[in-house]
Amino acid sequence: MAQRKKICMIYTGGTIGMVRSEHGYIPDSAAFRRQLDLIGDLSRSDMPEWELVEFSPLLDSSDIAVAQWNQLAGLIAERYNQFDGFVVLHGTDTMAYTASALSFMLKGLNKPVIFTGAQIPLCELRSDGRENIVTAMIMAADGRAREVCVYFNGRLLRGNRSTKQSSDQLAAFASPNAPALAKAGITIEYTEQALRPASVGPLELCRFDQSLPIGLIRVFPGIQFELFESIMTDKLRGVVLETFGAGNVPSSGKSLLHIIEKAYRSGTIITVCSQCMQGTVSLGAYATSQALRQIGAVDGGDMTTEAALTKLYYLFSLGLDKAEIKRLMMCDLRGERSV
Ligand code: ASP
View 1: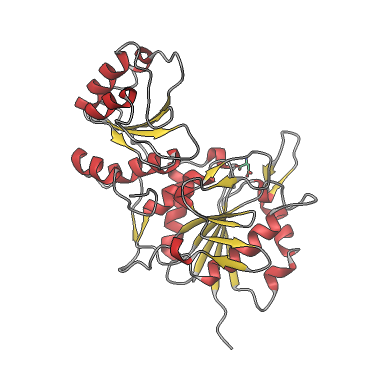
View 2 (view 1 turned 90 degrees about the vertical axis):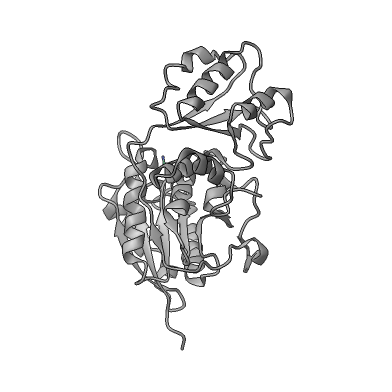
């Protein structure tokens, strides 16, 4: 008989293991463990063996940030050789950010790291958490997706292509610019051509610098860019600009360009993403985006905001110079953008 695979399950917090309190849902370790024990599939002999590691304190994912990304990546790196794969149980609100961050932090990853969670807690009727955990465990043991993924509601998505699309539907995540890596119906079908090839070389952990000043600005009609001038100083190392459509910003008033140019000269890397859920930025396609290109902004292509933001953290944390960061922002490092 083939040896059973070993999976490390990491519970960071989030709805899946939450209970009601007088202040609303909160994560609860004991209640979560009791609910896990009730999932019969997890103790079947045809399931992988698994061990549970928990964050302390458990967190709503709104409270997960760079320090916890470093903690989580460190936990995985320390256990990398002892396990065949990892299932990370995480709140849905910022799951796409954490999954994107980890895809950059874990260079050379050659085992599945599958994020999942739930829209309905395990302790409630109709929880989606049971199926999400069981299928994520099976996918982590399968080993074909050797990268950071999000599994939710029957779809396995590349982590750095995923984004939370719904706060109340069970299909909480979408991957608008890249196909699902697998679909779980009666059988689990992988899309072989969408999977990343095996990496060569050992796992390399890159922790992010928590103090990096990285920003995100969403453009809107009538935006008064002057108000951002005090933020866009040389202290800001990188900023993601969420623009209209294919990379367009209002052209009335030249204040934006002036501010961006000044920021660029003082070293800020400006990466242009789109507010559209699907499609790509194409700087220069319209006159309203041409100017951004001329003053040195980076075309974010079809990266999600989550991927662009965490990629800036990654490249700055590596200590690279500005020209190299600009170049790499436009390259595909972990499947996060189409080339
Ligand atoms: N607020 C919760 C969290 O992100 C929502 C969820 O898990 O679905 O932790």
